[in-house]
Length: 143
Length: 268
Image (cartoon, rainbow over all chains, first blue to last red; front, side, top):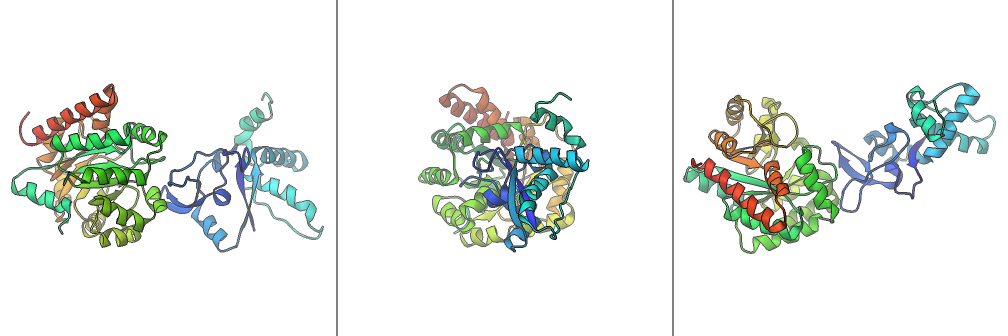
């Protein structure tokens, strides 16, 4: 299983929300999970084009599954997620949410390296009609 | 040795006085000034002091303390430097001090280290706002070993089970949150606050301090007529924000705290 975190403007840009890849264990809003924080435990500001990922922590279940080695984590930038959303819309007619588009971006990266017989399931967790104005703005389109 | 918080409550109970607990954020406007503020608080009638550890996400605090935390964090106020300042204060003061903060900076610093260094620098208790008693075992293990109290919160929505839990797990006093919501001055309180505090008292032998929203000497006097202690935070920070220059801030805070204490002692 692969989880895809929001790399925002890039994992090294300081503007992302990749809690598992770049955080350490902390407690915020009543849950213990990987948390983006400085060395004194102050929580970092985050950025992602996907509002649902724009948070310094991550569900404790995901932190647990990561520690158990059940999920590997990758990341996708705002650009990669938006491109993935667009491609999926053009090719399949499915408008995924920007959050889910991060997972689609990973499929696009992964698929060429797999055999034809291998099956990939991607969880499109939400629909993207809510994101049209954000995407339009990002792509410089007038809706 | 008896914890300074217990000592203070016991001494004041004997002379029929109520405990005034001002809150200030450590490092606002800077740690040197905070040390001066602690000293003026003590001279002006503070019986116990709550020292806030600034946090990036202070979810129990209203805009006043949020701004105060931001100011403190902007120039790098951190737990080790706060403890150094506490150490300095403790050289010539016996006023009990409570560290008031959020869990993540404590966890990050190390709970054992916090307890050991906290005690060594002169702290008497820890109040971790976002740590319910059910989750406090790890912190308590270290604070108890050092003789520090863990103070827990109750609110108007706490049921009897929770009141009993806090009465059992807490030390020093119970912090009763007077309102549902975040910190910050309130214009008025509901009359039933008196009954709510009495309700808590039926299940708890610890002293009860009431806080959140108390901003005037009249409110402090009324609340101290049925509680054991009164906590005033945002109102102090409001006073400080309105004063120009560090010296003036310190002076005005002293004057304000003296007016609270006077009102609680029956004067005006």
